[in-house]
Length: 356
Ligand code: ADP
Ligand code: GN1
Ligand code: MG
Image (cartoon, rainbow, N blue to C red):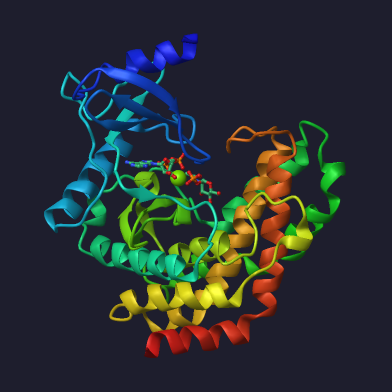
């Protein structure tokens, strides 16, 4: 066993597990936490080394997760099960922080959409998740990352990173920088709408990637929405938009060959059918009108965040090679351009999805 594996095993043994630990290995494709699959002779678990740089208030974060999962469970909804530490706490706190979840068996996570029914089902599940959160008292929630989807704030952060250009990388991404600057007047529609009351502030998931949902391995129905770190007040447009950004595409988020990366109106339609079907009782006309814009904005914003991280030396998102964030940024901008060019057709698809 390597030193790191021994450290993870020691961490795992501080939780109330059934059986004795037999194996620990890296698991999944998340960009934020270190996720490990722990196998004992009785059961499987997910151990996470929490990213305390991204989420400094780990107490507040875990209070949110316990509150949200208890709420969902009380409604009979399958959700993450937090496994307590042996001292009774919801996580292990120290120089490194760890938490443990029961492994949700007989499920799969998709890194890319291979079947539009899977995507439609994920839309339904994220829409329903939004409805369950509407019953949750927002005042009980800590804002785990303040201004998470405040795109003008993300733009300001990008400008700071560009000005510093700490690693002299700006020269390698002039075109991408030019795109972010050229789009700047499009960034404030949602934050302005929330401020003036024309867009409702709701409790939202805020990180609705397809791999943040577990699907039944046999039926492909959604079983559980996971990665609850960013459940906070936000806009429904963020949740819709982030799913489209990640899923309504013909290629992976980090596909280096841009000729393979295209926005798929057909997948947009499938997701919209699932999502709109679930939220049609609560969505306002203004939100419905802005769903395609939400998809565009979340895509540019994410690309901008990847670019900011590239300029800052890859300190936020997990990366596998130096240009990884730049490659990701390029796919996002390619998609954002195609989404923007399709607005009128997408608006029609949303209206049809709401009337189904
Ligand atoms: P990150 O915040 O880094 O994205 P996630 O909480 O999304 O971390 O977990 C990463 C991956 O681990 C998920 O995409 C999923 O594949 C898997 N995963 C996480 N929790 C569970 C669970 N309780 N049961 C099964 N798989 C899980
Ligand atoms: C991160 O944690 P993960 O991999 O599900 C990020 C999202 C980005 C996404 C891009 C807390 O999501 O905001 O959209 O990467 N999560 C956080 O793939 O920043
Ligand atoms: Mg995740």
